[in-house]
Image 1 (cartoon, rainbow, N blue to C red):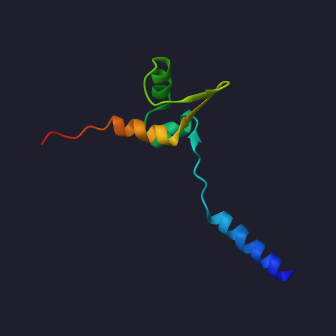
Image 2: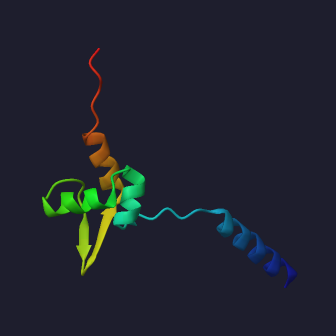
Image 3: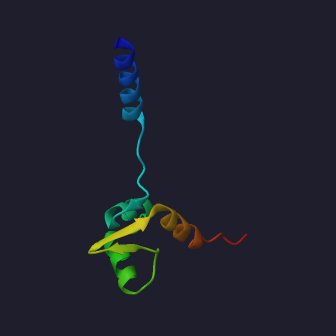
Length: 80
């Protein structure tokens, strides 16, 4: 029985150390990740511009992979 308790304690400690990175972010989270203000993301959505998003009911979610792809697409190299 002690072995099981020790194993469970190790598993719980490992889970507590892990950080869960969400696959989808709300507008505020997308703003933090990209540095684009929340209002800017909202304006882009109404103009059908900006990063791809999902809408489930009233909730708007951005896939982290889409946000990263959008930021890479908007990247410009300086002229040499």
